Image (tube, rainbow, N blue to C red; front, side, top):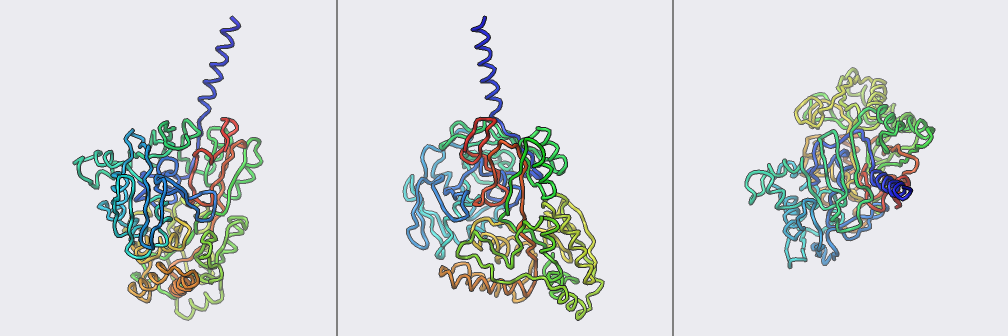
Amino acid sequence: MKHLIAISAVAALLSSTALAQELNVATANLSAYIDPGADHSNVGSQFYVNSMEPLLFKDPTSEENSFGPGLAASWKVTSPTEIELTIREGVKFHNGEDMTMEDVVWSLENMITPGYPARIERSKEFFGNVKNLEVVDDKTLKIVSEKPEPLIELILAAQQAMILPKDYTMGLSGDPNATEESDFIAFRQAPVGTGPYKYAEFTPETRIVWERFDDYWGEKAPYERVNVRRIPELAARVTALVNKEVDLITNVPPDQLDVINGTPGFKTAGGVTPLFHLMYFGGGEKGSIITKPLRQAMVKAVDRNLLNEALWGGQAVVPNTHTYPQYGPYYTPDIVTFEYDLEGAKKIIADNGLEGTKLPFYTDPVYYTNGLLAAQAMQEMWREIGVEIELKVVTSWNDPGTPGGWGSKDQVHNWSNPMYFADPHGSFGKMWAPEGAGMTRGLWDPSIGMDEWAKLYEAFRFETDIELRNIAYEKLMEQVKEDAPFLVLYQPFESWGMREDLDWAPYPGHIPYVLDFRAGFIGDAKNGITR
């Protein structure tokens, strides 16, 4: 009898341990789709690294650009325009198929020359300089660029370079022997990758379930299952945490840190995020109301240091210009592009007869931490110079042509410029290069004309001398200062709430908000997981 009791106790313990290999996460936002090649949102970036992989891995623990083997077992930059990669053997996709050179080439081709409209913007931003792919043999791939490409390793480590299964994707709709737009649309709801976790369940904007992928080529995932659900309301997220319904929550503003840290068994982790919150003026020069003098005045009227103190407890970073410390030698904090000058703003308004100007300001209620509060504060700052702002709280601002949508004229809007990779082209360029997201959506018409702006940008983009490249970047910032198409507000100090025994924090080398639960990147004493 004692023997049976002992066996039962061991069985119960093993069962309990097995069930405990699970993590529950509540996020403020959750993706509407999964497609690394088309996606570039702050929301989407959270949900790829656990399940999908590029050819090169960037060390997420370091702000420096340090690379390691990914789906390429090795690589060598053989000339300023060429890189050769040896494709890793023994890699399986989550559907059981072996990854081959054919999958790699097909995935990259569908970023270099995509037939799927949703990928065209990303193609221009990341792969615009890639000329062609050359298969040397069944293990070796050569990538050739049009011009010398100093950023090739950064590009091949980016989310947009993650490798997808060719046959699986092509077989999702229509002709299984043809790559069709409908294939990628179907893939968005049934994603398959090569990472340590597979997507076991995906309900758009509601829920993601990751399960350990036992055939993973690398170190196995520490959790058997990770459940992610969206809880948009802050109070509900905090309540779910302290009630032990979830183990980790995202997007905790400073005024809630003491609440969580003061609750036994819970803590917070956070840091300055490699992302800029900003506001922009819609429609470029196409609007009849928003002129250059108005933009200049409104930019000067925003006291960003006051916003930092009021909303972030002084923990955010207010930059002089569009630059990040992670850029290393290309970090340019001495350039002054944005500065507070209330009297100067009032003078511009008076000199140009702009008193009484009325504009709508569109903002999502929860997408950006403190986004609505920042908009309300700026509303008062602009009222002080004679500009009246009507706040419009919407959730459809990603829809072009709708009120508050991309490129709509005569409006103000909040946005963000994340650091997609650690180079000025990986943030400012991603948004404001001639083919960047902000430009292609009509957010800015440079007063010097797009052709001249393109010449200025190209002089920066492909320069390899550090000093000359920084000088070229300063010229770009001079044009930003002159036209005032947007205002960088700050790098927010984002925080996550969690169980006290979780050993996890966001990593400085990732793009913002990534939820990295791979082996070595999270510890969990309750579940017996060490980093």
